[in-house]
Image 1 (cartoon, one colour):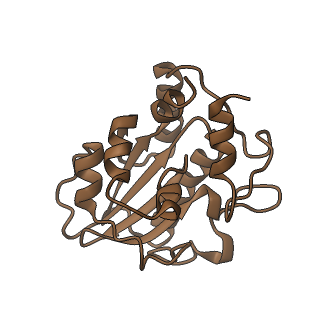
Image 2 (cartoon, rainbow, N blue to C red):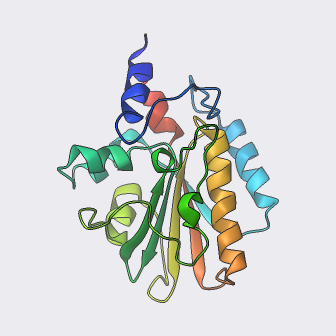
Length: 200
C-alpha cells in the first residue's frame, strides 16, 4: 500500500471515518495537471461568480501548520476540502469534508448549517485561533479591502472533485440566498500539489 493511501486513511479516522474512494469520488493524482485544474475552474465560471484562485504547495502548508500544536487541529487543516469564513480578520465558521459526511454522500448542509449567513460552524472555534493574516502569509493569498467584507476561503482538490464542486456550489448558493455576494469575496486555494507530493 502506498504511503499516500495510508495517509489518506489516517485523515478519515476518528471524527472522519474512512469510506470507499468511489463513494466520495476520490481520484488519486500522479502529477499536477494544469489542464484539469483549468477545466474545473471553467466549470465554476458557469456559476457566474467572482473569485480569485491560487495553488498551494507543501512548503506553504507546512509553514501554516507549524502555527498549531494540536494534532487534531492540524488534521482538520490538512483536509482536502475546507471552507473558512472570516469576518474582521477572524475565523468565524469552519467546515471540512470530514464534518460533512453522511452515509452515502457529502452534505455540507448537515444540521442545516448553511440555512443562515454566516453558516453555522461545524466545530467549535475556541481552540482554532486562526486569523486572515496567517492565511495570507502562509499561502501568499492577496486579499485587499477585507475590513468590511466577509472573506470565504475554500481549499479544494481534484483528489475529492465531487466534494470540492459541492463545497463551492454550497457557498455560492448561500451567498445568493442571503444576498451577500456584493459584501463577500471568494478565494479558491487548490491543494493538488500538496497531495501529489505526499504520494511520491
